[in-house]
Every structure is written in structure tokens, then in C-alpha cells.
Length: 112
Length: 116
Image 1 (tube, rainbow over the protein chains, first blue to last red):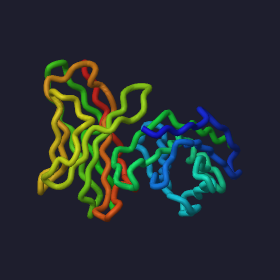
Image 2: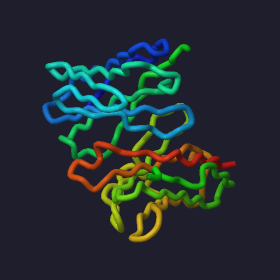
Image 3: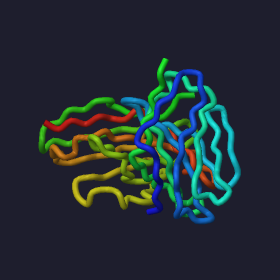
Image 4: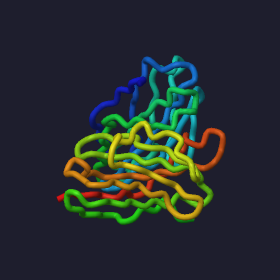
């Protein structure tokens, strides 16, 4: 399986932007990058996905490096509700891999 | 628009009993996935189903576990003769029937199974 590397934990203050990094140096040209998050005692929640271009949706933005070996999930204004474990996941089969492989993720703490 | 529903939310079984976990996908979704999260571990894929078909069950333990997604009704994950090691949170996800459906999987709240 292609591997992603994320910091174990990060901390942010409420209403400030948060940049969550992910390294995926073994990514190939057709691998999609997914981000999910899991709030305490809840199921994972889809956040965003991308292939090559930067992506925006109502929850977050995804910035993908030009060489695609890294990406950054951007929460523009963190709220207390954004405290969660954030998972960066690679889909290795050009969008046909339905087996999401969750690693340890980054535990985001948001301070009031 | 209701999200993915799972019931029961908590289930306690004695060793040797059967556990049945139910999952109702989001309206309009025809793809269902089951994942298991053991304590202090990440989620692991178990099985992928479409209506009346098992597409991939490569993550299912070889014995005691089975899954179905009938034409009518919820998807069922069945664990026979439960053992303590089956204690975990079981999550169901669904996705719409588009070409790259699985890029967006919507998860339910999970069923927490405790085997005593």
C-alpha cells in the first residue's frame, strides 16, 4: 500500500487557519488523495479529495504540491467542532480503489 | 436527508452468541462498505457490497463473519459465535452510484460491540 506520513498531533487556536500536512512521496500519477476526519466517538466524515489541482469545498481546501508528493488540508477558520483526528488517504487505483486505508492520522486540538 | 443509519449503537453479547449489525445507507446510495475499528487502532476495510452482490470481502475474517445487502432492507453484518477479540466499533459507509462513487464515502455513527 502507498504510504502517507502525517504528524501525530497539531494544535490550533479558535478562528485561526490550520494547515494539516501530509507526505506521500510514493504517489503515482493516478492516485487520488482523500481526507477524512473522525470526531470523538463518531464515524469518519468525508472532508475533501483531489487528484492534481487544488480543491475547495464548504469544509476545507486541499492544496496539492506540484510534484504531488505532499498535500495540505487547510481549515480556514478553526472552530472547536473541528477538533478531530484527520486522515490523509491515498487511493492507489485511479479512483477504483474503494478500500480506504486509514493510518493513525493527525490529532488536531483547537484551543478556545 | 437522513445520513447513514446504524443500529444498534451499542451491542453486548456473551461469548458464543450471534451479533447482527444493521446499516441503512443514505437515500439514493447503492454501495455499502463495512469497516472495523479495534481499540487504539485505525479503521480496517472488511467488505464492499452493492444491492444483492458482494463485490469484495477480502477484509472479512474467513470464519464466522458474513455480510449481505438485500434488494429490500438494510445491509447486515453477521458475526456468529462471537469471541472477545470481536469487541470493536463497526462502521458502515455508503456512496452514490456514480462512476467514481467510492471517492466520497459517508459513514454511519457505528455499532460498538462488546463481547463479555
